Length: 209
Image (cartoon, rainbow, N blue to C red; front, side):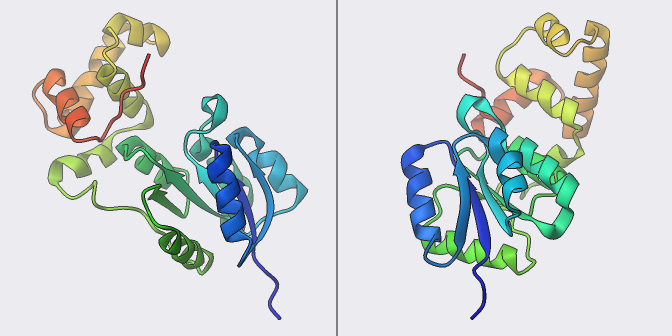
């Protein structure tokens, strides 16, 4: 009899966390869970899982993709990681790929599909949604650096340029150069048109203040 694959669940909503564990325990050995992505490393050190299922934004605003990236850096392909989110934001997709995660899916998927996706990833497949990267303009997001994505997100949130420069510890002149680079890569003539495009198409979801 084959030993069950070991899974860690990171989900900030207690009810959903409990439901996921209950469903997964039918086919897998759920060796740990938390509502905070910051616990991912500690749980992994206790017992190395075969797969980590993590929410993107967890309690205390901790980012599951960030901690998943640290796990990948240490364990490489030994641990598979599938991120799950309810927000179809392009920066999450790019970050998941850059941090070498094995997949990212959305919370509107049904449980049968989720189980199928977990099985595929455990068998060496990678799964990323492509319905948000279908046009030439959308593919241009992949050209942006991490800092450029942060700047674009802050611009979409309506922050003044002086505040953005201060927040990122750069000069307004340097920020201007970043914005020019963003516009060039995204092939837009103005930042206002670009931010409207990003928000209206759901590529960037401004955080509520």
